Length: 416
Ligand SMILES: Cc1cc2nc3c(=O)[nH]c(=O)nc-3n(C[C@H](O)[C@H](O)[C@H](O)COP(=O)(O)OP(=O)(O)OC[C@H]3O[C@@H](n4cnc5c(N)ncnc54)[C@H](O)[C@@H]3O)c2cc1C
Image (cartoon, rainbow, N blue to C red; front, side, top):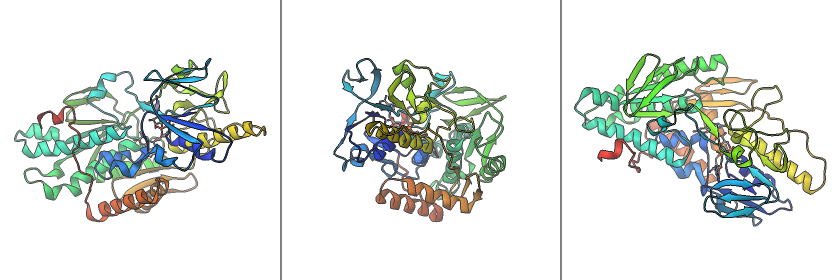
């Protein structure tokens, strides 16, 4: 049984093709989501169906794989069953936990209501509605300070997601929207990126981080570094000694593992991630593996394995190899070793930074490579063609086709 059809879980399914196993995939959603491009849905560049695919469709040709739509709420390791939120249970022989992570607000859970994070398709379409509605309301607002607050967008956290969101909102305001609004000049939009650390893209080499900051500033993004946010309310955000009035705050600052460690009653780190064994099994349970964002493990050089898609996929591949070895009574592979292939981030619609270790790239060439790499990892020809066409359209014509307000966001939408 594989719980979670994200990057890690699906990799186990793929790599067990042809093995003598029956596989049950359990997920609380009916789709696999390509999270690295979720911010493009939130900023009206792509539609959800370009970056998410029904799990059933993805395994349709694998008759040994069945799919269950259900939310796991516990694991009974004595009885070898997982418990679902509807009180159902499903038995397993071997269990792979790949349930990922969710937002974390560092003990300030009340902030979530005012500063939503980006994790699901619903989060993305809600944020998209929120951003677009802010421009609509600003167009009709006569009070200058209210209008300024509507045209101020604050992103908390300058990792790749924060940088990508900030750059794309700036592009939207500067390039896509200006010809369509009559009362407001959308060039007046303020995009503010707040980061508690000393630089944007902290995981990147210093020169690429500096380049990213300068590129953001060229797009008109205000970057506030070394300033932790101390308060988030319905109308604004406080950081350092400043308070900014804004109607839109997006949280891109922290994640916490799924509660899998609680289900299994095993040790976890401060972010709730299971401290797995070197073969990715859960301590005391050789029949249970855990992979991806829900575990804490170190790379060969002693650094923590990052919570990114390649790490989850590599974990999935490794677990499939261990399962195959057990089935065929072959020697168990050597302990899991994470290999870091590189880090990529887009800055607005024409620039990116890439760190492959052996080579570092930035600017327009990096953007093209970033685009090709992401298109390659999408699922299916239709999504690849559609995303490529959309990006070329945005790149050359500044038009974004997914500008739909489909949610009634909690605060901004109340008056619609
Ligand atoms: C906005 C955003 C941008 C990102 N950008 C990048 C990037 O550019 N590059 C990169 O490499 N990584 C990026 N990441 C991180 C990357 O997406 C994760 O590291 C990766 O998805 C982890 O894979 P996983 O299999 O552990 O979990 P996930 O891919 O998150 O999959 C977890 C699955 O488990 C399911 N699930 C969770 N709880 C339950 C439950 N209780 N019951 C049943 N099912 C459950 C979920 O529905 C989901 O399908 C980004 C993440 C986010 C949120």
